[in-house]
Length: 279
Image: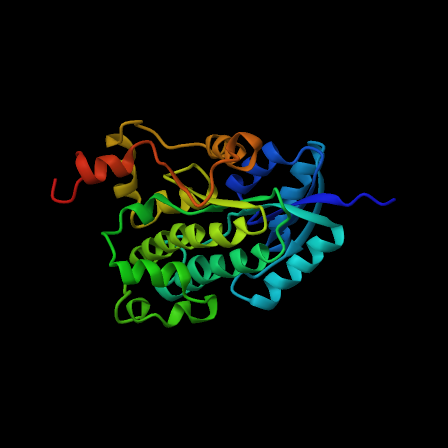
């Protein structure tokens, strides 16, 4: 009798994805995918040297065919019991349209394709951002549209058009708010398969992407955020990994469709403290 392996699919080979997968993959097979094969290979070597069984793949989250091919590859290995979606681009890395395509549409594709096959008892995590919590309140209709519009129609929503979304940070905020709303809706669908899915919305976590931001045009603002925030510092990938392990493990079995903001209090200071607009 052949026993099927349990597979954790990780999309995005960066520091946060690796930190989570290390905590939840003992005895499981890791399928690690990135848009750049060299990134996947480098992360796979680190994980393999630490005793994990890893297969690598390339994936373009803006292509349904590419995401579907990744799913098919995972199913040849075993049952998909974990999903960690940590791929994305930041406001300093891309245009508004690219950010919406990768971070909003790409996440919707991943949730849809993996949600079709996630095993009973499985769980998923999407890495969103504190930025989604800084977007002013949307209308009920906009919330519903971000949560439920079929993936292929998402980028056609009137309020996401180039004349409305003109700044990369604005695009990023809409994308990350959309991620948490989409996960709420997908949690209902995943639940029918006996699986769970949540978002984590990190603040400034020291990763190569965050270092790009700190060195970019918004660097001074980000440093001010850290200095004034209640925690007074940036976070680490391992801290995100700890929350990820809770959400994906048995201790988090009653948690689904939720968003966990972990930003050292930056958002609290933005809305109600010394980071508030105008101060």
